[in-house]
Length: 410
Length: 200
Image (cartoon, rainbow over all chains, first blue to last red; front, side, top):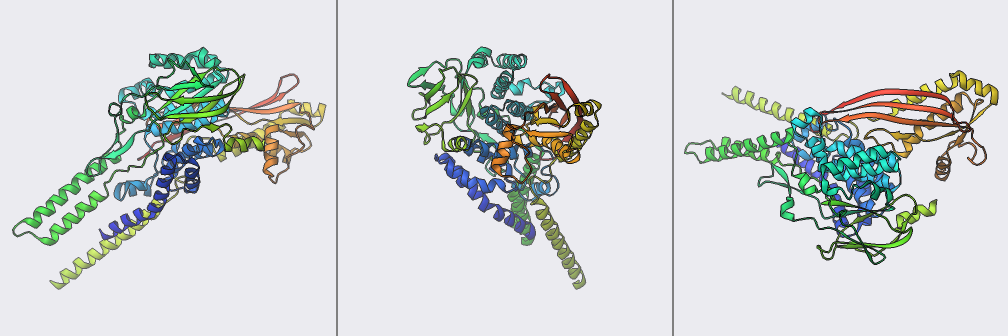
């Protein structure tokens, strides 16, 4: 028992320094300093420990804000490879997660986090006009949501219901097919979106997307937070969408003129809603049973100690065993904190040239971001990423340092 | 009585020692890398080697290619990266270049008198900028390629909550850039399945 306690202590001690560094990076990201976040996450993302995927996802998010697409691609790719693998936690990590501490296992996220990682990887490729790889990543994003399907849908091999909650991926898939010259598949993808969610019909309009030469990808709000019950054994996600209220529609101005985004300003995903569909895993059952037995042992020990002729040694042993079981039944609450609540896709058609673009949310005062001199091509589509944050309103000048450096090299 | 106590004490010590050894082993095994244990359905280094070995051998042995060499001498060939048409699979720029570049390397080594390799313009300047220590051949502007070695990777990929499976068809083509005719085509097929495990 002592050894197990020591083991627990060692495990916790081992990870705390790296965890602290990760948390500091997340704080830097939220306080509007993605450069600092990138610097702090870079060494962590190279460590192939239990937080490898998580730190690479975090690094990708921070690098994407800075338009450091190489860094973002590499980080998301490293995470993508592990997420596409099975048996990552086989052997010792599984046993360790069950017996000692769930955080020993390599973090792979919930299905919605896996889908979003593939979405951002696809977005990086889409921004680079690498539509073949973007398509592959968006398709994979839709695959990752299949874990949410119920048994009836699994038997029928019909995942349209779970995919309807992630129209974001389906729309981007249609756009990729369009850019790859596969009009048949593009139309099919857009029609599927419209069929799944009719409110997204204007956004999934074939011609609108075909004529768009400026795509704004706007991350709004914050994703779900992993929370536990009173004794830390059962986890879930909060807040619920109804607690947080409706997602406000975005407002766009180009060179000071308001752009009509009516119909396109519908959120194609709500991660708060998606996260409520938490997948129950075997380890959740194991953890809950451990917690219940632990509670039973503590009560049993207390009863033995309070009994008139009770054995104090037995009582202490029971309580200690119970405490140990409770201590090792804490839920893993690691999560990808940078995720937004939703991602707006705004395909616009504006005159080619340089434009000042502002995205704001009239129903969320103070939430605005301006980019000056965004380059819009006569042919094709330029894609720009806006991460809406209180401390990140700009105005920013295009090109940002990472893009300017790349352009200088070319 | 004392003998019983000693026996109990010994048993307890054994138990503690076993728990410590098991715990230590568990901890050591538990700390293995996040990229060591997993397996997936992606094309890997073994496929790269088998596929490119096979393609290089088939190109050289092809009667039409041999006839073209006999007629024209060394064939000036430009190499393009793989075009990704795989379902739900990403093929980054590096591997996309490696799958055709290795064919070029093999043929440069084993049939240097039959092909004159012209690097793809982007790849050439990228490698030159990186100052890698390999023979890049002549700059793309100096030699006008007559043939292109291209490759298209397609797949049928399925994923459900229990497994992921992918059937790959990797096609290689040597195309006459002037006429657009296919001089040679070859393919490599492989099927891969990865089954979900506990905690996946």
